[in-house]
Image (tube, rainbow, N blue to C red):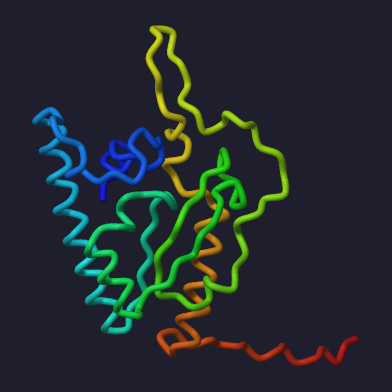
Length: 184
């Protein structure tokens, strides 16, 4: 799903927490069209991920922890399939700009052993509040949060690599140690 739709419905901004598009009557046509397009893309991607998971492939998808997307009928059906697990983390644990509760729904058992919801540092009480512009408008503080941090990507890559070794998808090669040099 495009992140713009998630933000429109309360994803990272929380303007409409836990509401879905059908709960928001009277939207302008251009927003309703964007939502319809994004919902179609989301449904397609989720169907492909479910089919791939049932065939033995790994899959990960991420959204804010309080996103309405987790409550969609398709997500609920996918969770009930028994293929998926949730990895909840706080973005600041992986060097994100601010505290932001996130969720990765996945089928990689190795992610479940990670603990990533306690950063042990202080946060400003208003760090998640929208910023005010010079014209009096509000902008959400999500631009720098749009990219995944290197620490998160590295962690996901290592966990997925170990899962690939565990399941036999990728062999783990342990190279022989070099022979001792008799010159020493």
